Length: 87
Image 1 (cartoon, one colour):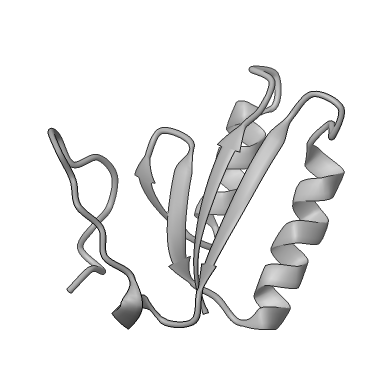
Image 2: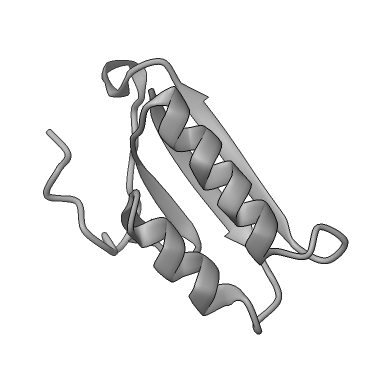
């Protein structure tokens, strides 16, 4: 499945969350990563994120799309991050 993860976390945890997510997904913009993962990988990502963040302060949104084929992305302005994996 294709996922987009958006996070808004305390400044003390931003680097840890970003570095962790970059091991699984492509960084596309500040606090936004996306990519293909299996259901098992997504379960591991979610589990590890729960260990990193403080749920009383932080927010992480996970958007799931069955396949990248059905996702459309439009950029207005500068493109940030690694996008070479997009077709």
